[in-house]
Image (cartoon, rainbow, N blue to C red; front, side, top):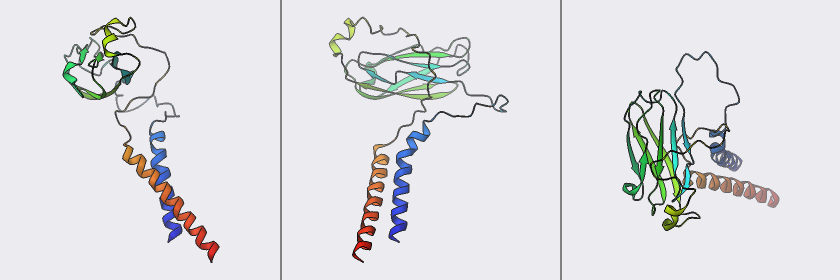
Length: 194
């Protein structure tokens, strides 16, 4: 019974801790060219973690929204009413690029929810970084509110699915590993005494 409990605890703990890595792995098989389903247009969140003086852009590929659709956008998070968004009208091809600027005294996670012909919620994390809130207006690198930033880099990026791993799940996996290790050690000690 002790061996079974140890094996189960170790297996569960390892699976819980490995699951986030496996979930973010890129597919190794190329996509089939003759899919019977239409592909969902891509969505990218450029800079999902920013400082209070920076901006992040959410880019929807062509065909995501209806051509020239005015998409409803709402922001949730600490002092969300003081944040700024711009670019909520889709282009002629249904693409959309929205710029998000957090409030100067904001911090934490912000949910940017799009309600149009399709719905989507992007999560952007804001932290107090190297800039002070009072210097945001004077930093020449920071784009002005309402401007869109060009895409950076040319590398292929993994899609953000909007999910995150709960610290409780990671803690549970670590606890299962510790419990399994303790059961293995207790069994070994018992065999030595016998």
